[in-house]
Amino acid sequence: MSEEKKDEGLQEEGLTLDKKTIEVLVAHIIPTSKYFEARFDHMQYQIDSINSNLKEFRNDVDRRFQELRGEMDDRFKQVDRRFEQVDKRFEQMIVSIDRLSEKLDQRDERQRNFTLRLFTIAISISIIGVLGAFLKALGII
Image 1 (tube, rainbow, N blue to C red):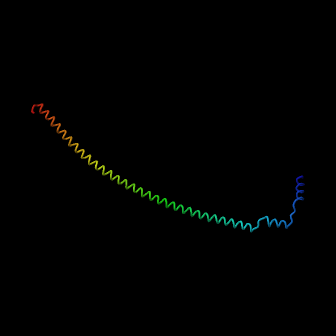
Image 2: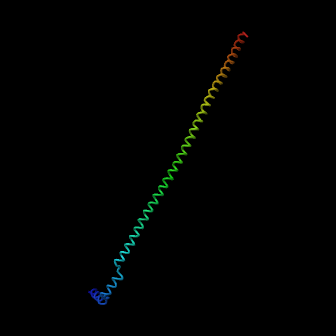
């Protein structure tokens, strides 16, 4: 009950507003529809600006990716050319090694023939020496 008495006391002491005061408060404190329209127009302008900036950003990013793709294609072409040059150089080296191996094979063949001739001469001289010693032992010489 004491709370009810306090509420009644507050209502009696409360501020009384007449109709004109309420109209002034509504007109000056509570925003009007024009205020909201202006705010919504401003917000719409900001959204449109953001959309426009986003489109420009996308275009810039797309352009950069296209440029980057072109640069990468150029790099890959350069790398391909370089690999072709390296392949040609390897082919030249292979041909050079083949020629060198042919020369070495021919030289080995000549050296083998020369060694066989010398071996034949050495065997012949040895046989002649043994034959001479045999003939001397028999007293023929």
